[in-house]
Structures are given as structure tokens and as C-alpha cells.
Figure 1 (cartoon, rainbow, N blue to C red):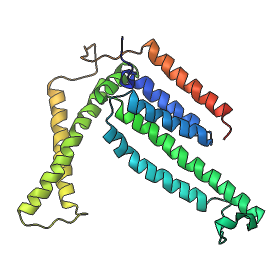
Figure 2: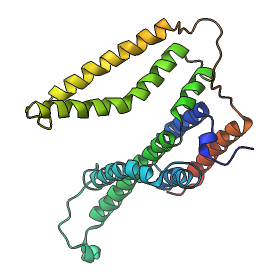
Figure 3: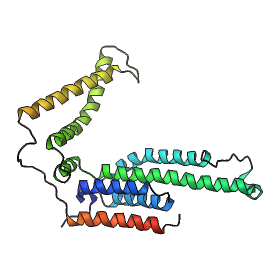
Figure 4: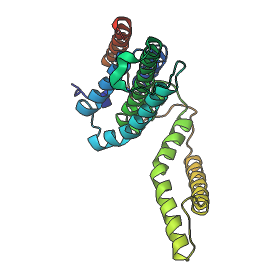
Length: 250
């Protein structure tokens, strides 16, 4: 019996479910629904996944800044925005039209801010709870993606950490030779890109020399399957979202 972890959810089914969530959320403007989606993804990552709390906080921090920025933009720069110089403690003296505009602006600001949190939560949830090798395997077996293209993506993902190391090595090389490198200098960036292209050519030659091709039958070390539990979970969450949109008062 599989443990209750979202990592066991088929990656392709998870991806399609999240895309459906995003499409459905794009047609609604209810604050409670967006907050509910964000809370659900947060609970799933903290209690039902192997994601580290430090990683969750690291990814959520810029999302909160973006949501706060959208909230302030909606609060002060929406269509019915009004500049109020009166003291907020004397709100009863503010004209009704101005108070109505302020209420409309607050509602718009909450809608914009919570939608950013909902979208960010879904994206971070997928990124932190999906194994990249299982995801590529799922794309091959469930989405019928070409193995040549899929393993090319996988090899590129494995090269990403090396690209950062190569950039640091380029910086050290310039400093060793006594060359000053500024923060926005393109010299180490150019050296990093050249070596990255060299690595990609080596990978292509290695795949070609080993006879790697997507023609004919082949065996797979990892072969993912869609379980009934995967579909039940997806349909249940989508139905829950639709019910929430229908019955949510705000």
C-alpha cells in the first residue's frame, strides 16, 4: 500500500490537474476560493510531502512580495481609486461615494493578491513534490512524448547545477589573473555559455554514439502508471474547487 504522499501522485495526472485548477481559477474572482487553494497546497506540502520547510519558505517569500505588490496596486490604482486626505478615524465624515470607492478598491486588491498566492502555491506545490525523472518518464508513457526529446530535457536538467558552478569558476579564473569583474559583467557569463554549449554537444554525441533513438521497441528502467487513486484524487479536488466557487459568498 502506498504511503499518503503527494509524491506518489502520477506526475502527468498532477500536471493536468494543476493546469485545470489554473484555468478554472482564471474565470473566478472570489477571495475565499483563492485563499482556500493556497492553504490546501500549503497543507499538502507541509504534512503530505517530503518537501523541506526551508525550501517552502524560500520559494514562498517572493510569492508573498508579489502578492503584496498586487494588493497595493489594486488598493491605490484600481479603476475607481480615490485619494483621501481625511483621517481614517473620522470615516463617518468621508462622503459615501468616496467610501464606496475605497470598499471597491479593497475588494479588487484582495482579489489580485490572493490570486497571485493561489497561482504561486500551485506552481511551488508541483515543483517541490515532483521528481524530475518520474516526471519525464510519465511524459513518455502517459503523454507519449518522444524519448529522444524527453531524455534531452532530463540531461539538460542534470546540467543546471553544473552551470552555476561553471559561472563561479569563471569568476575565480578572472580574479586569479587580476582582472576586475563587475556584478553585471558579461565576461564570466560568456565563458559559462560557451562551456554549456560544449557540454550539450558532448551529450548529443554520446547519445548518438550509443545508438539512442526513439524508433522501435525499447525497455525502460522507470515506467510510470496511472492508478485509480490518482484519478479519484484529481476528480475529487476539481469537484471540490467547483463547489467552493459555487457556494463561496466572497
